[in-house]
Length: 426
Image (cartoon, rainbow, N blue to C red; front, side):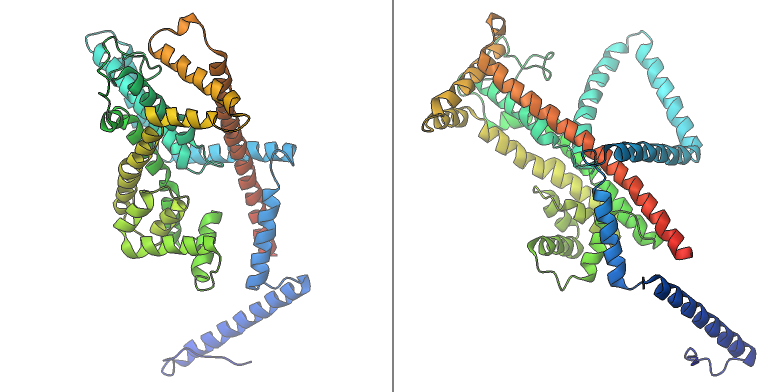
């Protein structure tokens, strides 16, 4: 057996050298026993076999979905829910002072809300603003937090709201809609403005709060990947997140990347790493499906929190939000909508039959804005409204199903990790 002594140990006392020789011999024996076990089991722990096993485990987890294995998926979802509740209960139990302070604050707010007095007018005003902000921030968080497939709340909620305000503004020649019922329902004010009084800036100002709150929510939803990668880098432990593992593999094989997706991810990673604040700002200011990678990159390279969150907040809640608002407002401006309806009618063969429901729908909206919806509702409105409502219900249901599948797969991953750890200890 050959022993290799560390450099600089020529001066060490004999007892130290004997100890080193014994330790080296022990380590060699342990490695030989481990290799003999691996060879006996036919599974040497080389990188290729490890990656192959991870790939098989990933494919096995991806098959755990409601439409393939409904009973197992529901069972794993229930067990994962209990595990998560237990973890959160343990965390709250170790932060009793924060929990008690929160409960005392909540009790004070409830007492203030229900006790009669002159302060109730301010309470109602604060309640209205708080619910408005919480609603749009919550929708923004759901859009980007990474639960399941993510809920596309801009297409389902904020975009239609901006479009409704735009159509109403051009019809009423005003944005001073009565409150209430705005924003739940839009009707024209008693005194309508003059023709041509509506500008792009007036509509932008009307929907600024909703849009900015939604943008703030999307920025908050980008924080989990950042905190996960930062904690992993500081602790040195490998997290269970697959996106982080793919990120580390991408860094290891950066030079061999050939496909477009890998090159795009590397471009985002390099931009964020080298440019810093303005690189994060550039990635957050445009519709970017790879922004999760920017959060992981910032956490991995220990970018300061306020550098990451500040750039993300400015990019998503101000720059990107104004780009999206302007796009929706211009698309649904009066002359563009009229041109689109005319274009639909010009389609050969089916044009007139497609054009009629849109014309009836727009006419029904005009009647609602001018308080004339009691006279009757055109069939075209029912058809289009029914289609959009069913689309919203279908997307929300798919979002819920994706959360169930994701949590079931997380529990399956826990089982696989436990089995792998048991195999290593044998």
